[in-house]
Length: 496
Image (cartoon, helix red, strand yellow):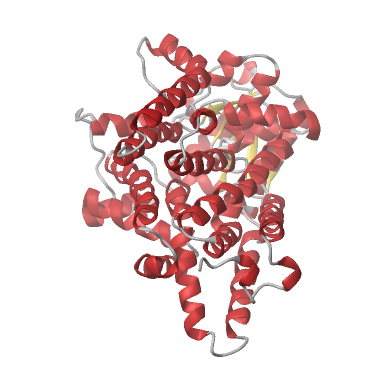
């Protein structure tokens, strides 16, 4: 007998149905992401880039939007622009997009977990995803991961279903989901490789229908991605799927091209560089992925997930279901190893999707543990409530209060001198609040571009500049405003 939610005495009787459980989990996921969005005291570093792209799109300046570096595809900024029609504010619109679609990703994740196992595993996996702090926090930021994850998981759910029951409507929706995922983040190209690989692996029956479905998928994907691919070709003169410098670095390494390797520094402020210096390129990459995976999985759920892999069959997983999740966990995670070996930046958000793919295994582990301790009547319930409360507290805890001077400096420039100013800053977030154009702060003040109007010096970033850097700035330019931890210097033609 397949375990069903209707037979689960842990759930109050009026809620023992799929729609009610999913509605509650979806509400919790959305509330946590909105709470996380309200807890950020200043925009996330990369967020200013997305909002600047959205502002260019709002003015019809598609070329300028796509030229912003480091380059990202246009779907998230375009969605921000659409939501801004409702919110009348780009920052709120950007957070709303990330939070809404990040929460809606509960639905395809539940569908996948239910399909490879049963309703109970689906419900617990969806609940874990809803409450994982790092996921909820990231989806409360001005970042593209929430939008991307919804379409990527949607594509995964459709691929599993379409391979088992081929219908052209499913392949059309697969192509649409994959196309939008690709236009959101470069990793969306994995959808093409995943579709071809999985269908080839499983093409022992319905070969003709699957081949036709694959052709349908590719046509829809190309129809959606084609304008962007044409733009890339116009910019580079080559047919390639991205011009993102980090993604290109990975493919240069995979293609065997010799890449100049940056020497690792044991004393670097970047933990991935310290790991590389101490444990080598491969060892450092694997160690960093393990550390960040533990963090994303809220520490306890990684070992619980490993336990769940061993117990998967007892909880309704078939061999192909486990293989499906395993292939995507490894397939999505492996490029991160290559990226670190190619000296590309690395952070927890790059390894988050494979951790989310693993939530069905975590659900197995949770149910197994609760089965062992269930003899003590209220212990599983108390443990669950305590864990969910701890994850909620971490999610809504205020963040980045130490960066508030950057916000104050940018707002001062905007209110005192209007938008559109050229600002040299040590942190790109200033340009968002100033509604201006960002210029990276040069190490030598003499190399400052002549059209820069303001300089923003931030105490936290001064360690990356020469010891006498601010002294030279102060001798040459007038200090126009001072905040706790930040100064604004104004450059006028007579001072240059």
